[in-house]
Image: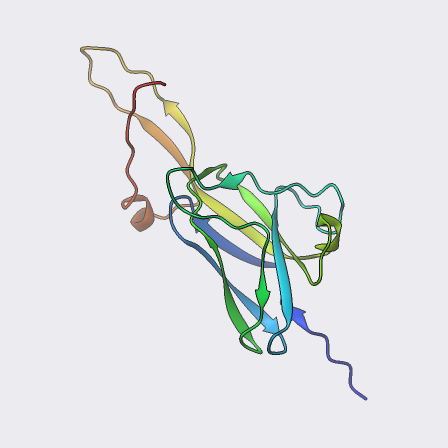
Length: 159
């Protein structure tokens, strides 16, 4: 008889932005109620016991961020995974690793795609002097103009 292989499509690219809700639409072939788990790794090491969690999180003052995230499929072809709202971390590429019935990071053996976390990556010119005009050139990665116009920066005193 025919062999049916269940699971997500692989080699997809996703984009999330720091401070905005991070939702990934997973497509593939699933059976209803199929258990799944997705781990966001810091390097391309799916299936390796040395896989480290992405350096993205939520701050103590708000937002939620879940990694790994698990559930069961609610559709046979597509469903959404909501990681929550990342409020700090590194703006760079991370790797989505898939598993079912996992007990360790080595069980997330299937790389299903790359998630680009967009946001600030550094400050090209962040020195200002009292009495002079101050222009801060903030470097951002992966953000198109309409998204970057919604973000703001706040300058706080140290401590």
